[in-house]
Length: 100
Ligand SMILES: C=C(O[C@@H]1C=C(C(=O)O)C=C[C@H]1O)C(=O)O
Image (cartoon, rainbow, N blue to C red):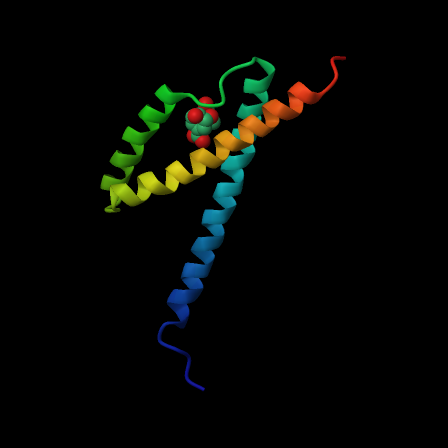
């Protein structure tokens, strides 16, 4: 049977999706480390100033790569919200541990 004309593109899309997920997992591994440090030093889970700087950077990156800035902003908003939840969970887990 003749291969679909879409086949090779779809294989490339699948490979790119895997890279995106791999990078996302690496990002969460780093932010989890930040979460542990924040809990240790009793810092707030949210850093609004850092997020403001990142939002400007995401907009510039979207423009540079010809992407819709609203889409890029939304994707990162969702990711950062999840990171903040993760940081709060790490903080609660540390607070619940009996003092050594
Ligand atoms: C990872 C951090 O914690 C939060 C999550 C951020 C992120 O996922 O990039 C950015 C700012 C913080 O609100 C941080 O402060 O660097």
